[in-house]
Length: 357
Ligand SMILES: [Mg+2]
Image 1 (cartoon, helix red, strand yellow):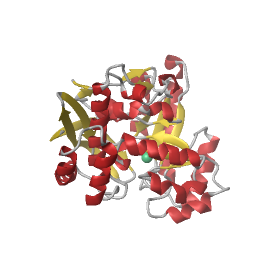
Image 2: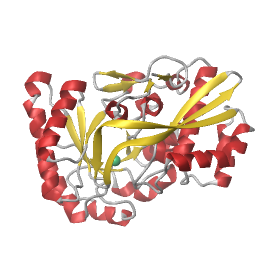
Image 3: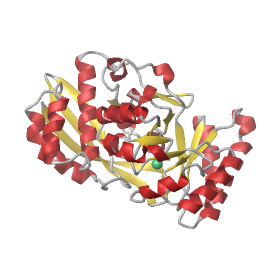
Image 4: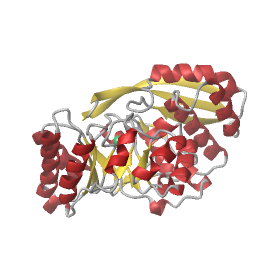
């Protein structure tokens, strides 16, 4: 098969601030494969917070290193391609480049068989749950405005509020209180109360996590994501039996092999295609996590509808979804999965079902 890569820029509608910093947009990489007249598309978006921060430039050069292994194979040979790539770079090196390639392979296989990817996997779209829409760290007045805008504009049923502010737990409490208040203010108009979950992106310590969990549980928040920073996984055991809310791990878990050591201390994991290396490894992670009794969430980086739609193809397997980055792009250069009453649902076009806007 033939491989082509192309860097492109995306701009965010609203800058997103999390505990580690602010992002206004990103440079992503389009990964295109072509074989027997059929084209498959995949996307790489930059990563941060995981094993290594990966840029589009790093991903493009990784794909150049892998090019001979890719171009001597057909898209039907992922196991062989991945084994060859792993001889050059481990699964932790440029996983987002691998995700773009793997996504393109799945798009190609779906098109070659005239089936959407979810059909190839026998998945039931009726199982797709509502996706969270993310609210970044901002002054409380901005959070109120943002939450009202999201609820009125999108009809989102679930909101993920970013906490772990460098200004401390009192600031986190003011942010969450502002979000709850804004949702209450628009209740009459939208006719429902959204579910709330929070993501500290590693911004808390153990006492802070336990105190915040108590406070958040009293306010109806459902769970906490990555309270403690990557690299401090040994501290998670100190939460066991004391934390008032379920804890999901995101940054601490990239691929399936990361799951067993942390599994006894967490309720679930956040799988991202850019962290793990694509749909194929995400399926491995789901099997591993289920075997440990864990719940499954999917998240995203700064991805367009191309990559979001790839995740949507396997989202019937998830308990929680956070596939919203495309909603905050202006413009989103791709179309694919449809927004249906707070759910991100793939269409019935073969492959991923994506097209350039
Ligand atoms: Mg997260």
